[in-house]
Length: 378
Image 1 (spheres, rainbow, N blue to C red):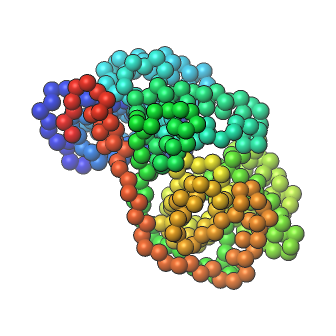
Image 2: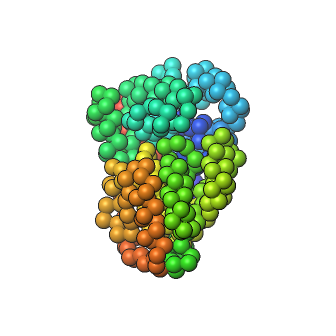
Image 3: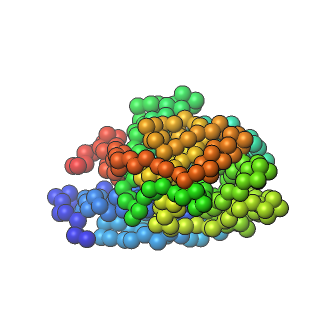
């Protein structure tokens, strides 16, 4: 990589990228994308300080990686970092601006803060039906309160879609003027795409951790209905059967009912796209921010059966290889699956998905230009 361009500025602007929560899944993808885009900027007049927990990211002359794995020990360690230690870090490195990739601002921080929003749970009812347990409901209630408080406090908010901005602004009476839209980058080109699947080879794929609002249960119920009709379907979940109480419950249900559903754990990006190329994506989730599997599946020309939601309709608009079912309706989902299993699956070849996006680090620098008192030459 070439060295950063020279600048006449005597002091670089120092930006603190706060994302100690990211460890796996979509959160880690967001962090890695932001880091890679910051590297691509190649700006000598900008210094980036990434505060993270366990991921491994590359340092450069103007990108410093500050790792704090001890944060993951307990909620008290996390609170200590957020409320006390973070201010020590900001002062130590003479930080000018804070960019949070985890939905919340740093408390007691006097620096200008930009929040990159990736959580839409505050837009949904906080109840046991969605969260799965009373403990989770109580936890999410306080998380929702902190997110909403942070969005009001932040100098700017970045959201991946207009509908998310509009719903937050409407529901919580937030300032629309300080919101900016930046769809997630989708520039991965898979080695192979789906060109159709033979009848006997059709399988189903759901790349998601087991969380109540991800609606794995509707797939279980649909497969049970299929089995009652003498139809055996095969599927894989990208989680671990023994990860927590909920995954164990689902695993026991699968075993008791002899369903052909397997937990395969976390997959690499290449393995995920390989599944898109030869399987049907099931996407019953009804709460999403980026809905990355839908976008990834489109890139791979994959056939998709998705819950009929605002975000799925928006993303899959004009995409021919898809079908919808009513949220949590296992009967309709089973009928959609049965129809697909009756013959070879034929997919329509579509042109590459062109999704406009702006580099989030670039957008953050544009925002900083607007909110800071001294000018930054862009």
